[in-house]
Image (tube, rainbow, N blue to C red; front, side, top):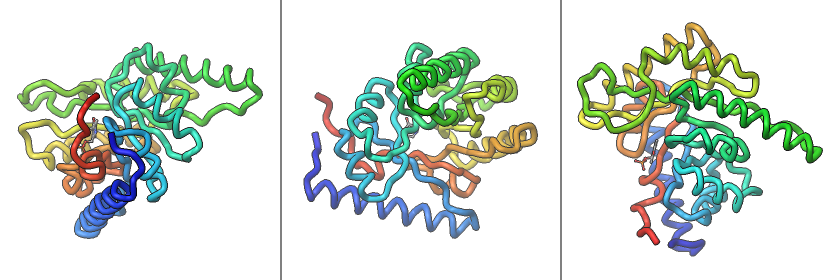
Length: 248
Ligand SMILES: *Cc1c(COP(=O)(O)O)cnc(C)c1O
């Protein structure tokens, strides 16, 4: 497990700089403003997230509830904003709303209900401790871009036809903020084509909900295509953190 050594700080600084340069170059060449960078720290220790915070990273992403909860608790004073980006079970909603600013994987009505209920309970809990209510939870609807493309299943998300119904469900909840859409480019397809469909879906969504203009798209391999197609948030893991650490 890596810890806070000068070597690790240098390693992360160099990789982060390289990713930032790629983002700037992609934005410049497509005439778009630079999206927000969410560094995905999954599999890596909290010490890496602490280093990233010191290097000026504000947003980090995690995809497993237990791992995210533990790191967020350890780094509670870091000022980092936590984005939950993985498949989320309804029974984890309660813990996620304690630390997460955003959930990028809202893919079904049952989860919307669970998050709304958890937010209400969390604000009651805070009230009981004499603390102010937390801000609304940013919700990105995760869409499965393979649907209708004849591609192999394998990654989560709602069907694009379900988007507006799911959006209505989020918008009806006072403690949830409909932030936009999220997707992972399907394997076996040019990511640019997938991100173009996502942008078209975003146009449909913002027609009904003008404030829900977020597009969370783009990972290490395809960030350039995502920037070109209007991503507002990139979720970059391996190109900042490096190869996955050995487990255990
Ligand atoms: C792991 C992960 C990422 C980051 O992927 P990299 O290829 O490591 O950049 C982005 N989004 C989701 C949903 C992920 O699970």
